Every structure is written in structure tokens, then in C-alpha cells.
Amino acid sequence: MRVSVVDAGSNTVRLVVSDATGGVPLPVHTAKWKLRLSEQVGPDGQFGERATEQLVRALRRATEIAGRWGAPEPLAFATAVVRNAPDRTAVLRAVARDTGVRLCVLPGEMEAELTFLGVRRWMGWRAGPLAVFDIGGGSSEVAFGRGRMPEFAVSLPLGAGRLTHEFLGHDGRPSDEELQALRRRVRHQLRDATARIRWEHPHTAVATSRTFQQLARLCGAAPGRRGPFADRIVRRADLRGAIDRLAALPAAERHTLPGISAPRARQSLAGAIVGHTAMKLSGVKTVTICPWALREGILLRYLEDGADWWSDIERTHQERPHPAPQPTVTPLSPRPTAR
Image (cartoon, rainbow, N blue to C red; front, side):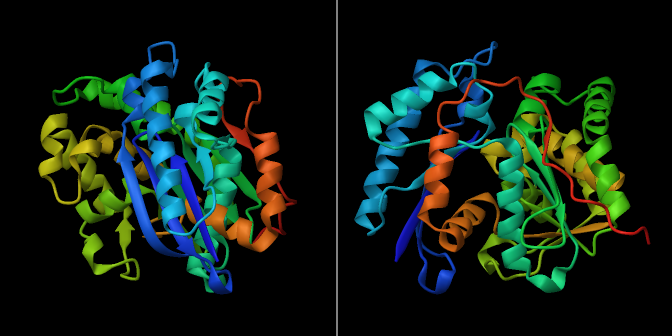
């Protein structure tokens, strides 16, 4: 059985075609298109015609490639870059009209839940009570749980690209005042979510996303060529040092540091500040880098709960009214007896 998933993120549209024999999605082919959609969003947040046309072309190509590899229409979703756009309904309609792809816009808390599922499956039950941190381009997600799905999940407007645009929107080295303002925003937004994580005292803390993977390499973790099974750990103290190294360079020169790619060099500093602040406020000293995240969570949920689950997602999350971007939290489970 072949299945495929394609996601439209702030920087990249990525397709993964997987074999799903035995209920485990094992990738057989991947493709990506570096569109940098977040850089094309207007000052008013409008996605616009140019970005829409590029998205349409990438999704049409992704569908063709998926079919060539024996997979049906991809499970297609978009993250914060489309979710927060005032014209997102027009974008979704253009995609459906010109490609036939039913592009879903997942709520931020659902992204956190599905990312948690992907991480749980990769880490296994020995991970115990699990905290998950994910830094995207437009939003960041935090989740905690003891079982298959999280008891707590929140999406926050702390994407590395978004914060870079708001606080570090120039090519030079950031000033102390700019960094202080950025840290204040991040601390304020993370305060409640990290208080919950600190209270729960998770057995294992995990970080996902390309941003965290690159920061891990900068902090001395194994390079990607060693494969997904190499152990990769990020220590909070090392991440604090990485912030200093990134802040000492203009944005255009950060790609010279180990692990930092040119397309993500500009937003790497904001990502490092979000990651370090999340760890510090949560009382977490180390995080394990997990290669599975949202895409794998969607594939796993599809395989475990059936095609009807995704059909429900498509009906519910294709053309909903545009909400004001703000933190969203799933209902909390009753807290256990205090330790």
C-alpha cells in the first residue's frame, strides 16, 4: 500500500511517498520545492496571486510525482503561512480549481496533536510522560502527554520566520535592544504553556522541525548523513552559546556556521531564542531531536484510524472562516495527583 502526504509550509512545499505495509510509513521517495512563501506574504498578511500561483504549480507537480510512484492523491495540508492569511479561502479554492487537490488548513492545536503522535510512535512507550517542542516558520507548538495523543497541546504565534520579520527584519547584526524585545515577546507567549510542562515534569523532552535539526547540528549533533537513527541531543547550555554565535553575525553570514542552511540563515537566530526560552522556562536541560513530526503523524493517524478520519478533516478544515491568529489550546485532562 502506497500513501503520500504533501505539506505547504512557510519555506518549503514537501512531498513524502511512503510504503505503509504493517502500519509503519517508510518513505520511498521525497520531493520538495523551496518557495519561501512566508517572504511573499504582504504587510496585511494577504497571500496574494504570485504566491498562490507558485503553490498551485508545486502541488500539481507533487500530485504527478505521487501518482508516478503508485500513490493516490496526496493527503495535502497547509500550515500557518496559509492558515493566518486573510485570503486563505481564495487560495484554497484556486488550489482545488487548478489542481484538484483538496488542501486542508489544520488548526494549530491539531498540528501539535499530530506532531505528538509522530514523536510518540518514533520514541516508543519507554519515553514515558513526553513533552514535545516544534518550531515552524509561522507558529510553534508545545504538547505534553502520557499516552498515544497529548493531554495538552498549544499553538503559539512564535514561528521563526514570523519573529524574524517582526523583530530582526534587516541584514545587519541585531542590536541588544532588538534581542531584548524579541526575548520579551517569546517569554510572554510561552509563559503558560511552559508552566504546564514544568508542573508535569516530563520523563522525556523532544524537539522536532528543520529549525531544531539545524540548531542541533550547530550545537555539535551528528550530521544528517549519519541517518535518522543517530542519537541527536541538544543541551540547553549549548543552545545558549549558539544564540551568541548567531547574533554575532549578520543574517547573510550565518549560513557559514555548521548546520545552518542559507535559506534558513536569517530566521535561525529567532528559532534559537524560541527553543532556548522554551527549554529554560520548562525546566528542560536537554531535548532529543526526533526525525518524525507532523507529516508522519498525519500518515500514522490515517493508517490507524482509516480514510474516513482524513475525509472528516477535509470536510471540516478546507474553507472555514478566517480566525484571528492567537494561541489555541486543547481541553486539558484532569491533572494527576501532585508528586
